[in-house]
Figure: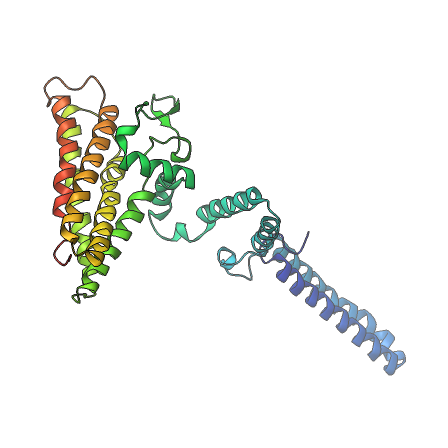
Length: 343
C-alpha cells in the first residue's frame, strides 16, 4: 500500500517497522551473549528463543492491528489532515496551472463532498443538512450572475418565458428543477447575499463621508434589512398557505432578496452624485423609481409563474396576491433606505 493512502497509515506502518527492528536488536543481543558465554550460551539459547517468540507474536499482533486501523494513532484527526487529499490537491493545483481548470474544479468538488461526509459537519447537529440544502442555491457561475443581474434590473427587456426549467420528477410526483447555472429563472442566494453585504458597506461609507460613522451602523443596517425581509417572507408565506400553493421558503428569501441589488444601485448613485454635484438625495430617489419598479415587475413575473393557475376556491384571488407581492417591493425598498446623510 502506498504511503499516502489511508490517512496516517504510513505513519503507523513506520512505527510498526520500528517495533520489528527493536525485536531484531534483541535477538542479536542474545546471540552476542551466547558468543561471549561459550558453552553456557548454547544452554541458554532455547530459553532465549522461547522468551523472544511471545514478544515477536505480540509485536506482529500490534502491527496487524495498526495496519487494520491506520487511523488509530491519529485519534480521529484524519478529518483535519489527510495526506492523500493534500497530495491530490497539490496535483490538481499543478495541473490547473498548466491550463486544465476542469480537473481543479472536479478535485475541489470531490474534496468538498468528502468534507461533508467525514468532516466536522457531523460534529455540529443540523449543519450537514443545512449545507446540503443550501448548496443548490449557490450553484452559480459568472455568466449566470451577469444574466440574472440584467434580468432583475431590466426585466422589461426579457419577453421570453419566465418559467423554471424542469429536469424530472421523483416517484412521489415532486418536480426537480435545474440549477441556477443552467437556468436563468432559478432562484439563488448568491446575488442577494452579496448585494446585502455591499449595501451595508455603502451605508457605512455614506455615514463615514458625513463624519457620522459608528461601528453600530453595520449591525443596525443589517438587522433592519433582514427584519423587514423576514416579515415580508412571512406575509407571502401566509398568502401561499391561504391559496394552498406550495413554494419552498428559501425560494421566497431568494426572490425577496433581489431588491438589495437595486438598493446598491440607489446608494452608489446617491453617494457618487452627492460627492460630485451635491445632489445625492435627488439622484438616490431618481434611481429608486427605476430600481423599485424593475424589482416589482421582476417579482410580478416570477410570482405569476410560481403560483399555480388553479388555487383554493375559498382562498384569496390569485391575481390580487401576485399584485400585492409585487407592490410590497416598493414599500420594503423605501423602509430600508438610508438617505439621512446623503449630500
